[in-house]
Length: 193
Image (tube, rainbow, N blue to C red):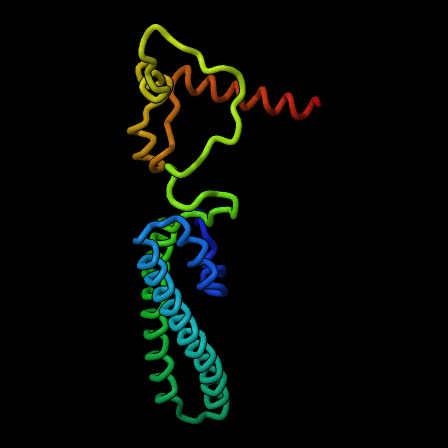
């Protein structure tokens, strides 16, 4: 199960509003992605409508077949239609799964809607609102935390990416124990206070 960042109902109900808010990100690729999302969503709804109509027809035809059999009347042509519509429904279900997979994959590339107070553009446009404490100075060039963590064996970024996707470290050894200790600390703190 994949958790999507943006709700497809929002894109369907207010496409222009969503587009205008996302346009603030100044990403020229987003318009094309949103067009493809809209097209896939329309195709998905068309498939659903057709499949539901066929299922309703099949239910009606099934009742008629039962009535004919009780009355000892021939029902072969109805049974043939039922079989054909059943095959069509199976095909539509396969199409629906393929469209859903494409749509979910594409929706994962659509970013969150920025809040009104967020500056336009990408992360380079962000500004510092406040700082706390003083920035320490070192007599050496400090290494980034991801290099230190990997060199100390606290996490494995490559395996984390392979398992869960970009941005998810796989904590190992003492790193896993540290994460567990922090979780326990927060649970204990919030249940006591």
